[in-house]
Length: 136
Image (cartoon, rainbow, N blue to C red; front, side):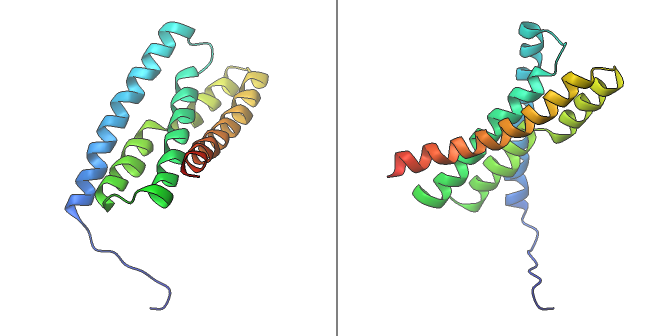
């Protein structure tokens, strides 16, 4: 079939994603827990922070892999799909947003929605820009 690219299952790549995913999940849990202790739970600061940091790390990784260093596919998958994929969490963001709406905090929910999306995109771009600046 034209235009369809099939890839074979690779246990090594699956394990790389799993290792990165385990690390990202632990980091996310610790950050969410500590931000709740520091800032309280009025707003989902932990989810906001891990999503922003994860987007920044992903931006750095993508640019390093494109411009400076091309590690093996397993390392790339471990860092991007594994670590960044489990560190960031769209499902928790969605749940936090719905919870704010259901509790009647419409303004907080709206601000959280806009600021979360903008900060994620801006952090990704900042990570990419940082590596581009270092690489020139």
